[in-house]
Length: 448
Image 1 (cartoon, one colour):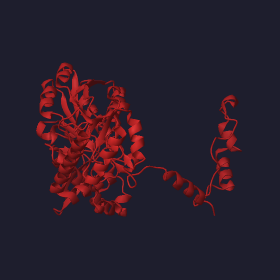
Image 2 (cartoon, helix red, strand yellow):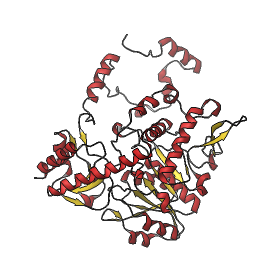
Image 3 (cartoon, helix red, strand yellow):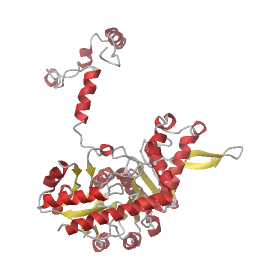
Image 4 (cartoon, one colour):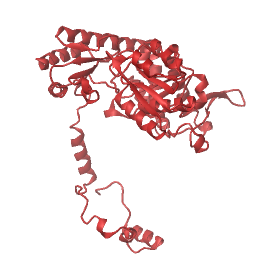
């Protein structure tokens, strides 16, 4: 048999057509004028058997450049980190793998506890009071933070640093357009948010000031200097943070951030050609009732035993649509679980050591490139990413290095025209000294 799944039979089709009172499938399209109907077959390949299809898809998949056959120095929002083997073991268990929404706490205690642990560890990393579980990814989490800020302050303007991830800013603009919220971008100077430009744009119409920590260029923003600008005009201070970096950087909560969002992908989730991810969203206690997504709370049953329930359910599935705080309909529970297991396996000391290794190895790579004569643009305090200025198009360098089994980095000219011929390089803790040295040598060859 060529197909695992049998389509409907002719008899099935006949019975359905009779039930709705038509004689043929063509009758279903009677209202469509003849002149706009397609008079030819669709331009699709002939159907294949299951075996032939698997063979064809395997051949196509083999053309992908993956991280098993290449050494990657590409970050730009999706990062290759160490993933403890226990992560895959736990999330592959059927009770977690197939679970979706724990609507019935009496039979969902395991998943509810896992989500509760995720919230708790995110709060510890960010220095915030309450975290949800969770959002689609870092971009949607940031956009939801903007909507919350606008609703809370009753204002219609968002200030966002241009050093925030370009794709996050695209999502932000999309979310805000429907709500008629103005998005104003603040220029970056030497790779970090220009404080003077921020001060000039900040006024009593601003709902939120948004920055990234570390930012898209890898630089560490001066949150201590940005916070008073935001709060000085009554706006909320929103920070999009890398959770691994928070293992060593001062958490945004200590800089009086009101909302901290981010993408949990660096914690226990593979690159996987760009997804799926898991966004996190943490707030001060005064914003707890406006937080989007789900919150799991701890309680006790009639016998005093510890238990968990969904609480403060403010999604459209639980309350009247017009009162809902968010229409996020998936909590990415499996990916949140992966992050929880990774954080638990690494522990506080392990995450700190991982973060420190990122800084040290990126610093070593930066130093070696300087020795080769490269110019490090926007040089300064950074985490695991930095910008290298090239003397030729980035695409040419990427192509040349890929032939050597190296994924070079991200072309900043795609999003910042003034940064043509600038390469964003990422070095995480899993890169070895030999790999870094080989990357630098091959870059030198390309650089001429």
